Length: 286
Image 1 (cartoon, rainbow, N blue to C red):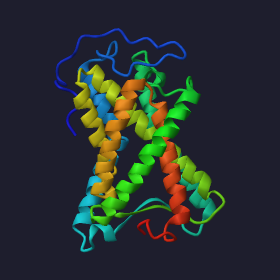
Image 2: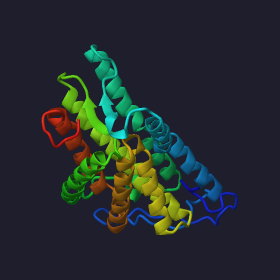
Image 3: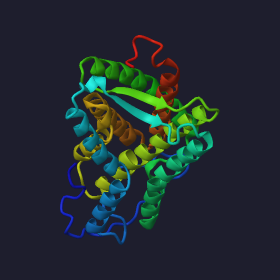
Image 4: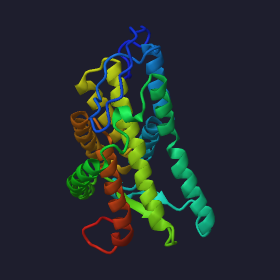
């Protein structure tokens, strides 16, 4: 990933913080100029710290994981990537406690992003993470999920068939009463974390640092692909493409909520669908 600052050592002129759009109006995702009282150097460090505590670190972990896959004696398609697994096999209440703990702590970087935005007179509403337009967001998100989800499934099957992707087992949770609620919660957590940080926050900050739309889109999309590399080259490529589409839609609408809805629906369908279909249908790799 390229550095999120063209010249991190040179302070930029301070800009007046953007005003919050009125209720019902679309936010403007691209805002030039750093927040009031914050230099380019500080803003660049902020970006690196947020990523180091969240999806940037996940990207590095995925790269290391994929290196292990490549150096294994097994072919890529013969190895399995588990997305949600048991954290305390045979101990349902302890397992549930760990699952809830993991979901909650994974969202801490989102709260940190909200804190940094507030420092410059902004809020998460600035990037369109709110419930002002929930019916339209739900409709748009559902439509996106239907298109992207279907295309993503076909892409995964094709990538696995060519040997470029691991066999993805979305869920290995035991059949306890809390399995489905946890899978839904994990899906929502992934959607909020990824879209707030990689889609809204990162693109917004790179705009403030003066990056071009193309450069910011490429950076954001490659980051999205990087932390899916543990699934293989198919997972990487598919999520880079998804990142480009999501970024274009975010900039068009000025809101990340439709993309959060879409991401939640895609992951929920994948996790729950795989729970009941994996190993029972011939067209799904297992």
